Structure formats: C-alpha cells, structure tokens
Image 1 (spheres, rainbow, N blue to C red):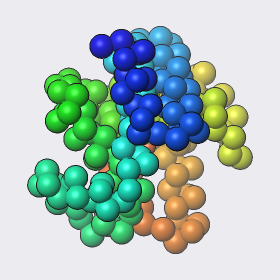
Image 2 (cartoon, rainbow, N blue to C red):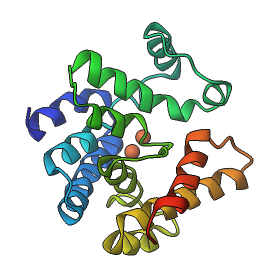
Image 3 (cartoon, rainbow, N blue to C red):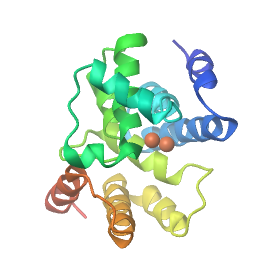
Length: 189
Ligand SMILES: [Fe+2]
Ligand SMILES: [Fe+2]
C-alpha cells in the first residue's frame, strides 16, 4: 500500500486537525528516517497510522482492548490517553493485516516509549514531538536536537514528558521510566 492509500484509510477516523497532524508526523518521520538511516517507507507508514484510533470514543477503545484480551495495568486504566496506541496497534494487526513487528511496535509504544527502542520506535517517538503542527514551548529546542542526534532527542523528549506529567501530578507509565533509565545508560550522549 502507498501513502495515498494509507491517507484514505485514516481520513474517516480523524478530524481535520488530527489528520493534518498525522500527515505532518509522517513527513517528519521520512525526514528523520533519511537522516538516520532508517527505512523511509516504514517510517512514513507508521507516521500516518500512529494516531488512527485516537479519536475513537474512549469506551470503544476500552472495548477493543478488552475484546482482544489486552489486560490493562492499573496505571494504564487511569490513563485513557495511552489507550489509542494499543488500539492503533490492534487495528494495524487485525484489520490492515500488517505483520511487520517493527512497525507494529513503533505504534504500540509511540506515547510511552520503552526500553530497548528500535531506530523506528525512536523516529516515530521524536517525529510526534517535533512535527510541523507542534508549537509548545520548547519544541524548537527539540527540533535542534533532532538535527544532531536521534538518541539525544529521544532522551530530551522523555525528560520533557516526564517533567510535564509529574508537574501536573499525573501518572507516568512505567515504560516511560524504563525508557529513560535505558536511555541514560545506553545512549552515547
Ligand atoms: Fe498518539
Ligand atoms: Fe500523534
């Protein structure tokens, strides 16, 4: 399938704003993939698909997870914002019949990150932070990092996210903490 077909697949699920976001993330994915030697086609595809289930009502997301036998941890149950990543993974697998584990996992972990991230995981994680539609304070700093080092940008993204969550007394998923601990131990910064 090409990017035009993937755009047609995601379009009915998303508002104009989220559709644009997905296209911009895909463009950023391609730019990062080309800079850091990652498969550009896979990067573009996960960029387009990563938020496909984001606007599905929360009850339907929960139902989808339950029907697929996915057991949520307490912290995941408390954080509905994270559900769409698991649902996106399921949709890719069950409906689109995508079998490429690397692509499936990039979408599955795009919100939390994880330890032992692949290069494709990192590309999507970073692209989601710095895509053209993002305008939060600090985004330019992350874009600068992304020109220098993919690993450094992953780490800075994790720090940004963990700091924002803790500042608001919100749950930090254990995968994000594991990703942070893994990053500071293994990245050559
Ligand atoms: Fe997302
Ligand atoms: Fe996103």
